[in-house]
Image (cartoon, rainbow, N blue to C red; front, side, top):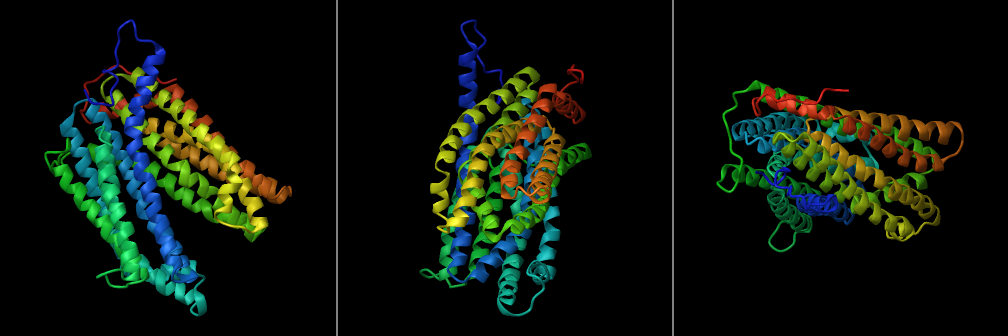
Length: 483
C-alpha cells in the first residue's frame, strides 16, 4: 500500500496511542521536510532577484516589484490547479486507481498549459501598459525608467507562464503519490541554477553577457522552462509511478476545475486585499507601511516554508487514506498533522517573538520604523501559530477534495478582520496601528476556528468519497451522513 495510507500502522495490542502518534508524525515529517527545503530555496531565489536589482537602481527594484504583482497571477493559477491534481493523485494512489490518476495528471497538465497561453499574449501585447498603470501612467523621470525596466521584465516572465503552471501541477501530482523528494531535487537544482544565472546574466560574470534587468528575467524564465521540461520527462520515464493518458473522461476535468477554482480565487483575493490594507497602513504613516513588510518578512522567511510543508504532507496522507477506504484514518492523520505543526512552529514562533527586534534591526535602523516593525513581527509570531494550524487543516481538507471551506475562511478572515477591524478600530475609533497588530492575529484565529469546525464535521469525507466514486476510482461505499 502507498506510503501515505494508514494500513501500514501496526494494529497489535501492544501499540499505544502515543506510539501511533509518533509514527504518524515521522511520516508527516518524511513527506513535509523535502517541501520545506524546497520552499526555503525558492524564497531565497525570489530574494536574490530583488537584491541583484538593487545593485542597478531603486527604479530597477520597483520595476521587478511591480512586474511581480502580475507574475503572481500565473503562480496562483498553477497552485490552484496543482491542488486539484494533488487531491486526485493522492486519492487515486490510495485507491490503486492508476488509470484514473494518469487521466487526472494528464488533464491537469493540459489545463495548465492552455490557461498559461493568455498570459503569454498579455505579456507580448500589454506589458508596457500594465506597468504604466501601476506606475501612475507617468512618462517622465524615475517612473518612466520603472516602466521601461518593468515592461521588459514582465514580457520575458510572462513567456514562461505555461511552464510555471506545469511546474506546480507536475510537482503536486508527483507529491500526491507520496514522492516529495523528486520535486525537491528538481526544484532545488532549478532554483540554484536560477540564482547563479541571475547573478551571471545581470552582471556579465565570466563568458555570460551583461544583460542587467533583462538577465534577471531571462534567468527566471529559462529556469522555469527547464523545470517544466524536466518534470514532463520524469513523468514519462520508468522512474515515475505516474504516466500520461489520452484525455477521454470529462468528469475528471470537471472535478479538477471544481477543486481548483476556490484555491485560485483564494490566492487572488489575497492579492486584492493587499491594496486597501497597504493604503490603510500608509494613512498611519510611511514608516508603518514599511514596518508591516519587514515584520511580515520574518514569518514568510522562517515559518511559512514549514507551514507549507505540513500542508502538503497532510494533503497527501489524508487523500491516500481516504482513497484506501479509511475515513477514520484520514481524520486521525489530519488531526495529528495539525498537532505536529502547532507543536513545532509554535515553539519556533516563541523564539521569534523574543527575538523580534533583533530580526527587524537586520532590515532597518530607523528608530520609528524599528518600533512599528517589532510590533508587526511580534504580531506575526503570535499569528504564525494559527497560520500553522490553518495551513495544515486546509491541506487536510484539500486531501478530501474540500477547497471551498479554506476559501471562505480566507475571505472572511481577510476582509472582515484584517481589513474591517483595522479600518473600524484603527481609523474610525482612532486606535491606530495597534488595531493592525490585533487584526493580524484575529484574521488567522478566525480561519483556524472555522476550518476546525469544518474538519470535525467530516463533510469532506462525503465529498471526497463521492467524487472518487463518480470518476470510478472506488466502488460505491457507505460514507458518513452529513450533519
